Length: 139
Image 1: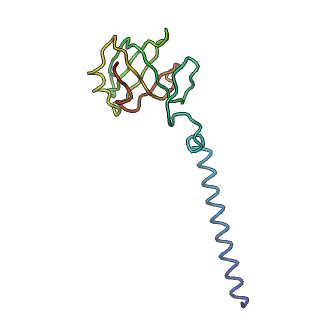
Image 2: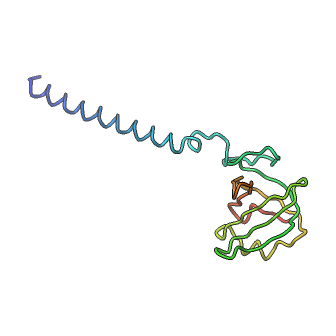
Image 3: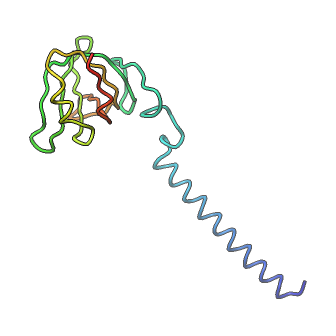
């Protein structure tokens, strides 16, 4: 090989190294911001855990409870349920996009329902956010 070819290879190698550094930087950034979801830490993913008083924000849980009250929100047409679970009043949030109107017409106060959802926090209180209308079953 002559000197021109050697210098050209060095430039190409530098470009490859820079591209690898950029790719690793992007992956590192993605891990920092989305690490728990990408690493699969078990929260909000896969099989739902049985809800307990010690269940934590972000966990996907399931529970059976009695409906104490229900109402559609004034803005957004989301469904809010208050349920009795083991002497604890829990709020269940069903977004409009998850079938709030359909569930509102089929659920009555006093019904026993099975709920699957993600634990979140609203105004300092735990609530369970339902992702699909199929995640609530009337018993």
